[in-house]
Image (cartoon, rainbow, N blue to C red; front, side):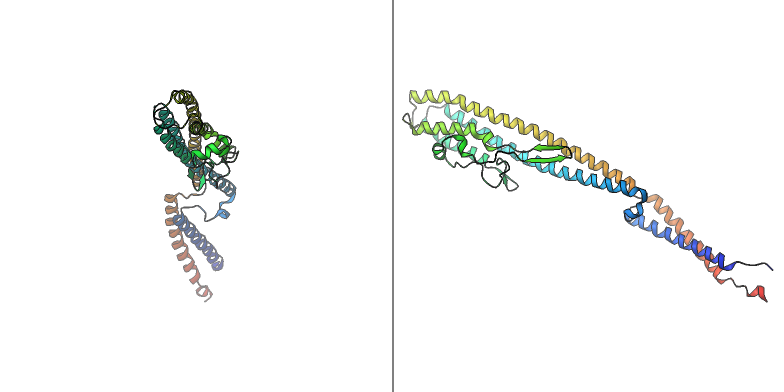
Length: 304
């Protein structure tokens, strides 16, 4: 009589069924999530590489965001410097006329334009305040305030340190200009003009005297010097803007590369996953039928 190992065969069929069911589950998970594994626990030896890539990408995106904020600040700074340049130009043009009343009216308007430029804010802070962003960096509100100050530089209350931003692991950049660096020369020109107007050879009211004309001709050179100083700051800000734009591009490219790298490590091949799913379903059907048949096998016919 032939011996039939029913129990062992059924056990083997059951193991095949469970294996096929697990394969169905895993391929379903991959199709649903697009990932090879639901978490790093299932990534095996790739887990460390995936974790490191995620950390590097997060840093790149953080640096990119920081560089974009710095770039936005520098754009606002550029606009403020343009206004300050206009102020110096307006003052110079006014000084070439021969009407004292017009000169002083233009000087007051130019001063107000310069003051507003130096008081520019971005993201709730004064951009020319250095590390002291909560206080207007220029205290003078009028030409009279300039006259009352011992020196033009005394009307500035900004800090002496420029703010800095970390844009990469090895890159830290000064990201702001200081009000006294940018505005002392032009404020000194306004102060001298206001003091002359209030002095013994003033006021500048109506047609200019010969003394007044001589003074203004000499003062124009000082205004041009202040204009040049502002232009230097425009150039410095522009150079920093260019560098920051390159950092944004660099960090963006780095983040994209790392995203691609992470995808290669943890993303599932959807076409392959679909094929595995179909194959696993077929395997489940076959294993289930085999197990069902073996479960119903009886030795009674052989014992009669």
